[in-house]
Amino acid sequence: MNFLDQQLSCDVVAPPDRRRYPRYSVQIQIELREDGSDVPIRTNTTDLSRGGCYVELMMPLPVGTHITATLWVSNCSVRTRGRVATRHPQFGNGIKFLEFKDTGEKVLAQYLDAINLAVCN
Image 1 (cartoon, rainbow, N blue to C red):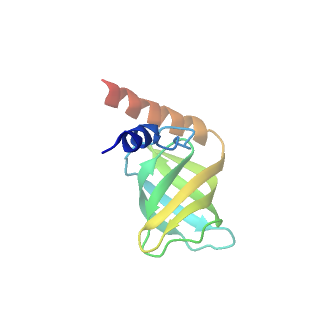
Image 2: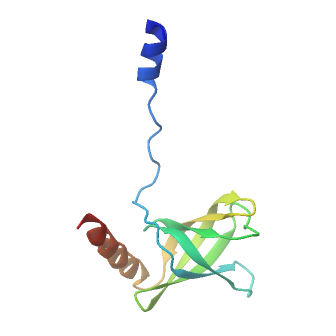
């Protein structure tokens, strides 16, 4: 390896993480409903944060689809409006949370804070 190759390899920087909140690998029950549909899609999260989640689906929803989601966290149901942010065919969707109902955001934050404390201790 010559000097130029060494210099170039040192200048490569990983792109910054775009996530606003840390995510956790946690499986909780979630029910998704596309806007305008009464048909529930029941599955589990694989990753979860205050800003969204990832769900495995054999038939993922199109990016941009607006949904209502209900998550079961600490014996409480957390309802949120969301939008499909990513789509991986035959694998799943990334969901961005847009608006929480009632105290849902607080319940989710407390749940994730407890996970964070357990991981750090």
